[in-house]
Length: 388
Image 1 (cartoon, rainbow, N blue to C red):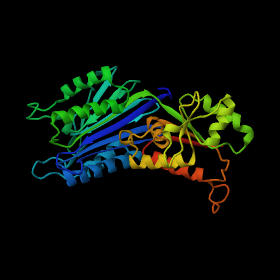
Image 2 (image 1 turned 180 degrees about the vertical axis):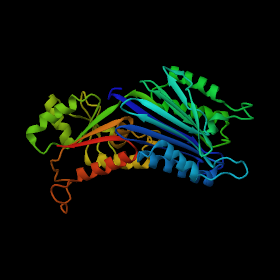
Image 3 (image 1 turned 120 degrees about the vertical axis):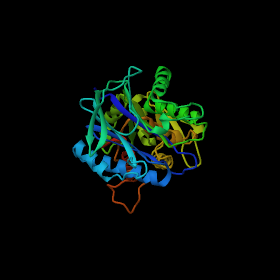
Image 4 (image 1 turned 60 degrees about the vertical axis):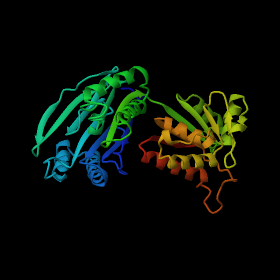
């Protein structure tokens, strides 16, 4: 699969009515070579279920990322999980999805969760499964290879049994969910979030907003990568201004400029002038600018700082971004809509912003960028920084 493809992961959960904590937990990690997703469903609901599901996901993710053999990982988790003495079942179930970025091969491991959904060309395909016993527990596994447009998703049984005894006698059911998702693929499948949110909205509807069990859906959708380049701060060597302006303009993806001097640098290269949009000015933020071929032009230091704060406040969840169309929110949106973020950071010092207590080679801009990058990497964003 080419480098312009992206493994788009999204998850959504609905808490059981009356519970502050969700008894399902999802954790995923991405490296250059693989993506790993874990969904665990703790027995029951509330605090106890949350703790058990969290423990399960943490053990699985930690061991899988350490490249511990899969069988050893599963043995460790099954050997760790307590058994309900009344129902004689494990206190937490789990689904593991691993994808090799080089070969696009995927492997699914399932312990007592509903079967995964695999869609190819918008149609559901039931995966062949192998069954093996590990420490007396039945473990199901499936394998396959992903193509662009494919979707692979895992649910907890709160989705499977949505509407049980109310809107549906036996709950929503796997086959009905698959049929519903096929309709979603025909109309609204643009990214993983669009698929997940449609299914979870229907789940809520079937429960009539009275969620009977923690319900979670996590999925991975293979689509074209959406990259963004953010050019902020003029280069240290002014003779290279045109070189970096051309780097930005030739970038295949979204293009963003943060900084007045940087904006003028690119505008001069293009033979244009930055036009200011006064309607976007706020008392704590300068207005955005406009340049042809550039998707967003903002002020630098203040806007980057405010955008980072906005990202923290919404926990990097694009659905929780403020509605205000100011420079910081627009910059945060560009970052969240991007799959890979390339930061081109000029090191020329702006004396107006420089802290006199800091050495000359440590700029406020660099400190802000490092803070932003750390936040994004914590949220599994692909970020590359080049200082110039």
